[in-house]
Image 1 (cartoon, rainbow, N blue to C red):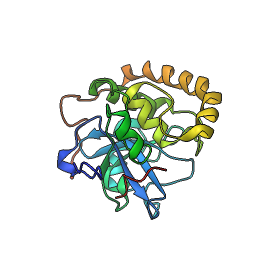
Image 2 (image 1 turned 90 degrees about the vertical axis):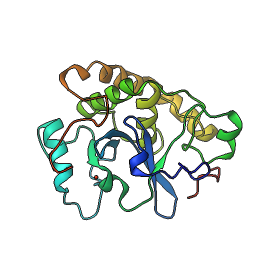
Image 3 (image 1 turned 60 degrees about the vertical axis):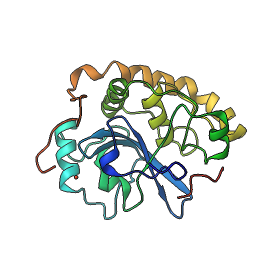
Image 4 (image 1 turned 180 degrees about the vertical axis):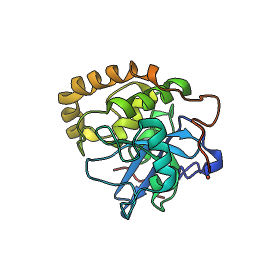
Length: 213
């Protein structure tokens, strides 16, 4: 992985990685949790699709049918997609955890964190559970894909690096997000995921981080 850009190769990904890809001239990034086997769980607004056109690819259909019982279903738009549909042609990036305060300060927000990530098994458990329970109402500022990925990785609700305005706003809704998170942790028992390597098995299975905002 590039030390400065966080760009990584598909073959270097590991289950439970927090991944992201820049959108629209790097004005924002979309985040998710890599589950293994070319599969990503992520949080998107209602009515938004992972890739244009809105037709779901066969691989995504298979994933959703296996995990949710319905290829078109998503709970509060916590969705499961193939890596290609998640990226929409963008570069694959991997967020880094347990970095120094200095590194977190000089790099673009939400690309690296001083927080320590939980073990992969716990991360995958949270993401899979939230696929069933949802992650509350999507809010661009207060409860979005970054919050989702960070929560899955750490069990915490308020990612760093958003500035004073967002920190204050986040504190208002932190209790609600925490309630969703606790409910999600208990929902995993109904699902089976192979944590040892590649996630569930299916047939037919494939810059700008240094600017602080």
